[in-house]
Amino acid sequence: MKRRLTFIKACYYAGALADLIATLPLASPRAASLMFGVDASAATDAYSWASRIGASLMLGWTFLLAWGAQRPVERRGVLLITVFPVVAGIATGGILAATSGFVAPGRMIPSWIFQALIIPAYLVAWAMARGIAARGGRDE
Image (cartoon, rainbow, N blue to C red; front, side):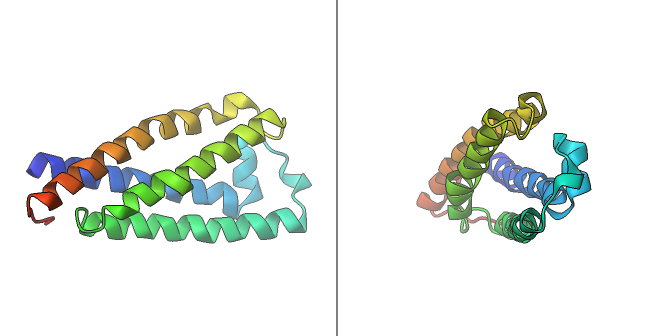
């Protein structure tokens, strides 16, 4: 059971780290420019306002995942909510950004690779946590 808990916690922390990194381009047009090649000088007030709201939500999700890691079996529902709607929504946004020409598809590849890895990992971690809970296991 210890290996399973380690894997589950690692999933939470990997997501928290990714969310912390994802906060940067939302909080700063310059970071968005460096990471995704978007024109920082074209950031309108509306774009800045919306992206900073997104940054606060992304940072909040960072802390939610770190909180979930403290009691990973008990808080396993956070894993499913992270897959859908959160990661699914971020992936959809990335696809739309790339297909619209806002972001070059090549700049999205690291995000898409991470999403392709984290979604099944979170589903496996959730299933493991559910199994531990069903057997009356502790999550500490």
